[in-house]
Length: 122
Image (cartoon, rainbow, N blue to C red; front, top):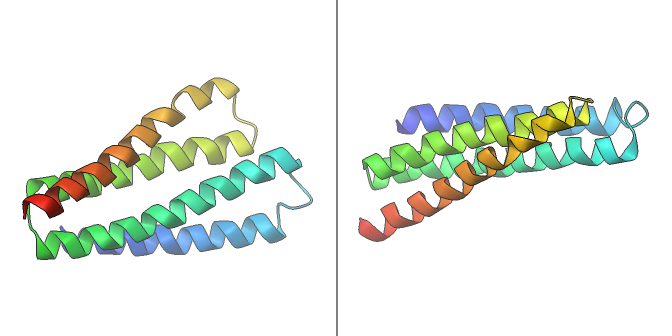
């Protein structure tokens, strides 16, 4: 799993940097300021959690356990749901989609907690 999490984290990190550049250059004049803020928020959280996946890859190698693996997948799911819905809202998706965003946030929180527990139990 360490290679999978590392590769996924690196991919998400690269995409987050690309999204940030896209937002700063191509979207600055195309999106309303509040929507541009949403886009930037999604890119920032994506980048932070890409780094978290890199750390998870390291943890999976150092403290191999089911908890570390679950944490890694929760990071992936959390980024997809949390950041994905925020990106969609930035581009004008129906606001009801925002009701799904907290599921992604809870997934990210659970991932961090599981990673901590896995480290403490190792």
